[in-house]
Image (cartoon, rainbow over all chains, first blue to last red; front, top):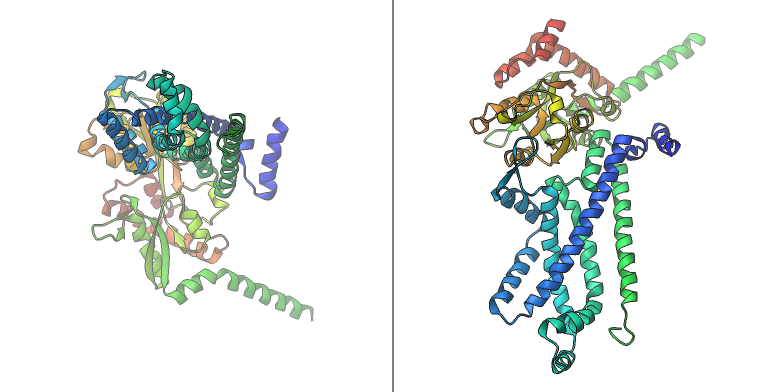
Length: 248
Length: 265
């Protein structure tokens, strides 16, 4: 393996194409850490944003006026403000208001760190869109199907879980796909609050090595591959869930 | 015959050298303005006054260069991540922007000898933490600025976990919020911050490391301009101009400036 890395050092000396995250062990390790932080942050946000979407869409159909109002104002607030502003708001405004805990170096630090705030903030951001996406799917389920289920004695929760949601899911997958791709790309914003993800690490590396061009090309390709994997997985899922005769 | 050939060759060579090297100086004189890239957020080396004009130690030095060339001056505010690119692209003729002189930077821009200034790295931390040594930072989160060269050294040599932000305001805020144990930055800026009453609980506890010289820079290949700048820097040191500017802008005379003054005196 080492001779491959050394080859990139030679490449730099011979051609000036500088890829230190391949030949320099320290830079390599931080790029790998950055990659896994991006993957982990993306997975956490994908999971929670879908959960928020499902629960939110269900609560939107609630018979209580105030539940609907709260969900709608949540959507308005998170959909109508820029995600970077939300990140700063959570990290610098909410984060400093929360109680502090004694940390292991003898100081006082906030309960939640930058990664936790990025995960919370981005999940709520993408979740707000997901609620609307799921609502569109739920509204696409024919009323007669729901009425038939009611006639068979299903409870409200059962209808949502067993009938509306599975059908709605198939309708919303293309739109959900779109939003989740956007979410993975939005994780790059977390570098503003010093979450050591890929863009953050790349920024450190290009500052140390003055190789902005090479790092930009690498980043573009890395995100292209990362999002490509997600899209590929979602498309497979879409095909696997297809019911003959339903939804094209 | 032979002599004639050699003479012609020499004449051509001399012409070639002078026409290539005098390029930027001619451009500046034709234009009548010297365009200098300086910092606008680095008190007192380059910052904005209440009217929005850029002032400070480095703008004063740049003014000296413009006076010497007999042209007007124009300042372009730069930041660490774009200052070398501006010079490469020809947006600025000269860069005096608190840049640490490093070998890899010398491959991108031309830094004339000798260095005009110097500063080192230190931390700002709560007094109650009682930090004594750089090794005390091991395993602790330490705030920094994205793009600063000492981030890597601080984490590699002393095991600190660098939490780097875009600007100093965010880093100071994160330090106050308890997100990091210390803030690693230039000692010249930390001295000023620690003296601020709002930061009375904080101190600069460690020994300054990486005391590194600053280099001003011109574009690669502009040897004539670089030679002129070398003369100017030596002159600044010889006449005590740097020491006088430090005093003018309220900075204690640094050991580097004193040593250089003694050396060239």
